[in-house]
Amino acid sequence: MKTILTNLDSSLLEEVSYDNQDEVLEIKFLHSEAIYVYQNVDEKDFEDLRNADSLGSHFAKNIRNGYEFEKREVERNSREIPGFEGTLEQLDNLTIRPSNEDK
Image (cartoon, rainbow, N blue to C red; front, side, top):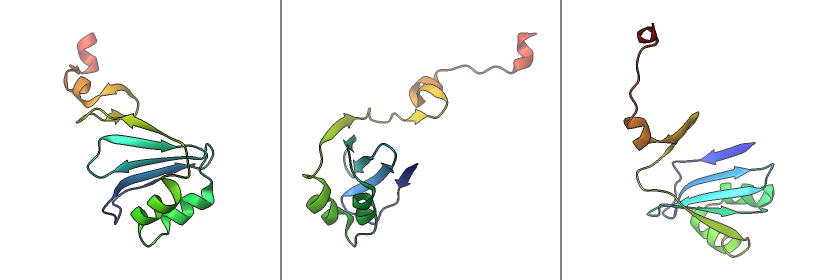
């Protein structure tokens, strides 16, 4: 199951998600367009981060240098839409017609 934390009380972290089946922690930092993906993070470490008094300090001390990560660049002003194979920009360019026009 994937857990997503948003609206964080942090001056460093914007969003945190954790998939306990794959043990993957994804972090989006404030003032960054990239998502950092940390592999093999056990659930206890995620829960410790989630419950920390300071998310940023806990991340810096316990996650940042303790796990391998991959930096994924996210295109600015582009977001994925569930069920749509594209971006908001591509969706803006679509013409949607009522189904009765096909007849």
